[in-house]
Amino acid sequence: MTPACERLLDEGLAALGIATERGQRQRLLSLLSLLHKWNRAYNLTAVRSPEAMVGRHLLDSASVAFAVGGTNLLDVGSGPGFPGLVLAILDPGLQVTLLDSNGKKVRFQRQAVMELGLDNVRCEQVRVESFDATFDQVISRAFAALGDFIGLTEPLLARGGEWLAMKGSLEPRELESLPPHVVVRERLALAVPGADDAERQLLRLGRNEDSDHRQ
Image 1 (tube, rainbow, N blue to C red):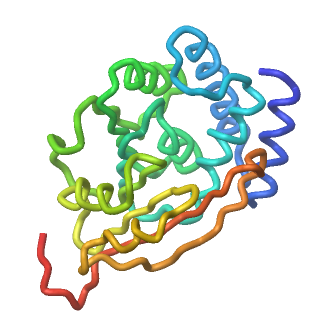
Image 2: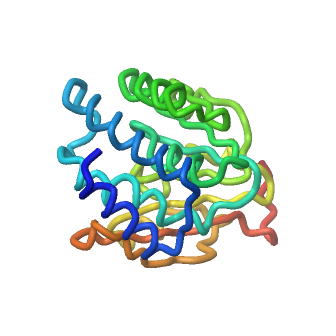
């Protein structure tokens, strides 16, 4: 990978307050190189240059690492594996499941997991409606409108769990579409290095514990 990419990654991680070990840094750069290689053949992302991929994929994914807790995370509509692959690299103790129905994108995920030696990542090619498991947190990056994201993944969120919705701009009607038992715990603006032209925010949502709703 180019020195410019290495510099952008190092500066971006520093700006986010994320310290990485040498092996983690190398895995992030290897992931970037693999994505760029596959993208030329399989059109996995509209972002073409590896320098732009640093901000739009690696650092955008890393920007929500502070909000990830618990022991297992489901990345819904993961595409070529973002943010899940980055979050798995940054926290080797986190069990991450990548879920997507697109065959070529899941093939890339599996190749990345194999080449990077990520034993804490599982890749599933299946529609979310057909998946059956529960997780401490469920994350999405532009997977669907907020209400659809919650509705489709509610059976997959463990009791006391949390949704993490990575969004750009947010229409007021998206918040209005939330079920009455789901509350926004926190809404945070994200400053993503290398993606200064794009509005980014994170919504942390959970079930209202005072509600009569049950899974």
